[in-house]
Length: 491
Ligand SMILES: C[S@@+](CC[C@H](N)C(=O)[O-])C[C@H]1O[C@@H](n2cnc3c(N)ncnc32)[C@H](O)[C@@H]1O
Image (cartoon, rainbow, N blue to C red; front, top):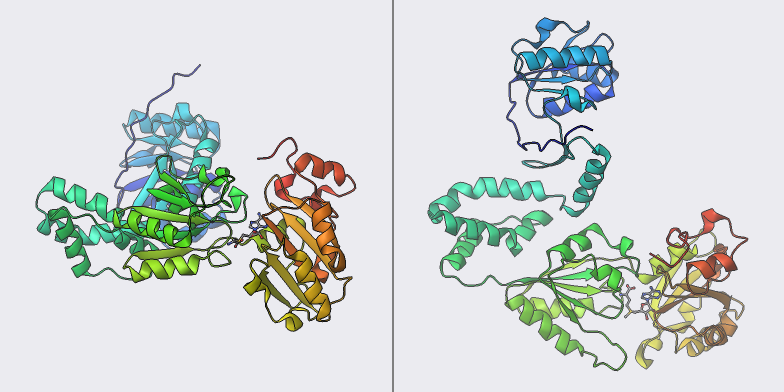
């Protein structure tokens, strides 16, 4: 067995340095491209270069020599890549480079290489290299993909920002440890969030103020992100939501946020539950607002995590206004609302050509909200989605029918949509209350009313993936929602 090598990680300046690539296929092109991007002077040796390499040569990005490799090619090189894929050629390249003391890498041949090229996450000046010592390159690529997902897209701009302001900060804070504190604080600050969001430019005055806070040891005020957690399946979180969860000091969450979603948050974040749970006190909205305000004033990054989308029956608007009125920076991160999640997993489109040209989301909660323009809601070619409507379903159905909607209009009720416990039942508007009662539907559940329900070829899902598969043995696998294809107890 080959001894495992602990490689020394480093990033090398190859600007204007001569680098040799031997080979004409995709592997050679990938390495040549990377070298060109690093500013190297690339010389490529191949008798039959592929199209990408020819294009690079035509653009003047590299020097192409259309012939076989010769020993003399190695002379004066700073770095050599063997990528011909022909063992005899690559071994020769490796042998001569090593004998000349020039670093050499042969693609996929660790014994012929004395350096490895890592998988790279490249965001402008910020580069992250991942290396498995050559033993599991696919694992390195997988980790690279995971890092790509969690890193903000504009993290490179933040690095550029730091580069541009380094001289000023050095002048303002001559002491190196004060500068370190400043940068750590800056990257956690609302100013940095603005650079990342690319929505605003940060002024010199704001930088000076932040420096001043550090000098006088005042805490920077924190900020609140009101984040949509989606309908339940943690894979339906947005990338921005995930980034916020992983940067949070404090997470204020309610009942609709599943533990599997909280598992994606930073481990040491403080968690504050403000929802309803059996036998427990429910936080009033004023109390929630106060918690958010106090945590932000303590300088924390607060995530207010809400089921679905914060601006759809989520009181996100009220919380945002309250915090803004107290001078707290607020960002809203949208989430997939329950209607869209439930529609996707049951195959019910919200609109559908020739069947529904409009969709309305209404809440069935509370007497006031139920007092709506029923005549227009009852109009045809229209989908109605009712949130929080389990207990008022009978009243809602009666009002729609009284205002002209056909009692035979198809309805679907989806409980816990997108989770392993999801339940779907279908029927007709006239029987809506009975349908809910006989199937023991409980919150959180969504009611969809309209012809679009017929587009779903699922008749019923009762509790969990296994039962689902049993009840739908006639359904083709492709029609089974992705999250339910796994049998044996959920995700
Ligand atoms: C307070 S509202 C919050 C809605 C949320 N902001 C959204 O955009 O989905 C709660 C209601 O959303 C619906 N809901 C939320 N998650 C659901 C799910 N996974 N399945 C079915 N309905 C859901 C239910 O009607 C529930 O009573």
